[in-house]
Image (cartoon, rainbow, N blue to C red; front, side, top):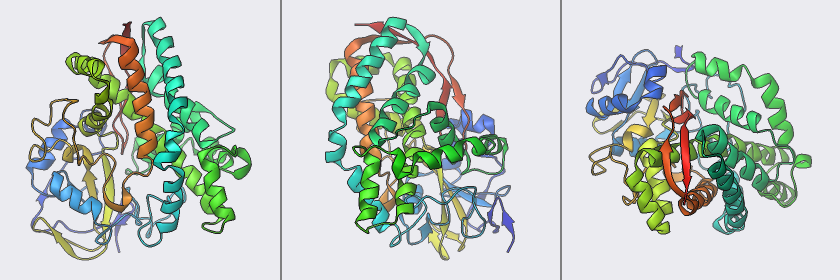
Length: 407
């Protein structure tokens, strides 16, 4: 068997368009909208020869592949590398990169830890931290919304919620960058991120141990499950690691993207200030409009067919969530940011058995920061050009100069 980018090489299906593009080129990652539109225009699937992958960006085909765990597995890895054919730089996620029935016990434990009731107990703490941060930023006036808000808030409240005794903001963010860049090919982004592993991985491993977690945090729930025999001690540590890998950079991206959207659409911010009940729809629209996780892979478990395209067993399929969330056949005026849209069905949190288990926490964090901003800030004004941070699986900002005017 020939491998390409760590997975089985396969020929283009007869029914798929062949497209010579690099989805992982920096210029594509930092300005992806033309790529998204062209991918949808080429049909249900496009075959990309340089990586020997199928890519889908239409809503219906992407949803079908992304949600059908029986035909399209996550256990082979949600990146280009097939974890069943090639060793990874880290142990696979026991939540994201396993399929039924194997992931049932782990998912049950993590869902209990992140249940609506458990998260409800964090909301007051999140709001107090958001208010304190927003007050500081209003006093400052102009600032970099990425470094001083989007990165600061989640790396303050989330490690505390997990119960980490150790907290190093830079290591947490760099670890998330390693994880998400690691889903791509062996390009400069992946190599640069993984070059930091010798310093970051030992710290992450140590932080996830029972002795470095407070008994009142979310992470302690996993070790209680281990004590009860539901999972092993090692699995408990890996579940804490899953929280850190999936719960920091995604929220950093979401907050930064939300501030980018609102600073460039002042009429939508006026709506949010006038009606606090729009906080949740605003966040959902940010997710649809910017897709913080822009792409994840699935692997065909059998010869099958989607939208008339025959797919060979072992094929790697790049599900381009960012393209699907802008599909004009699903959304009216999809390139318009509209916080009154209520975009039920967007794919930013996944779908099916692999939908994001941490979405309750993410929503609570975004509700706290957006509600505080809407209550305290009169206007969000651009103070310079934004800069996007290229990442093999995520869409987020590297720099966003803005100004908060007080109410």
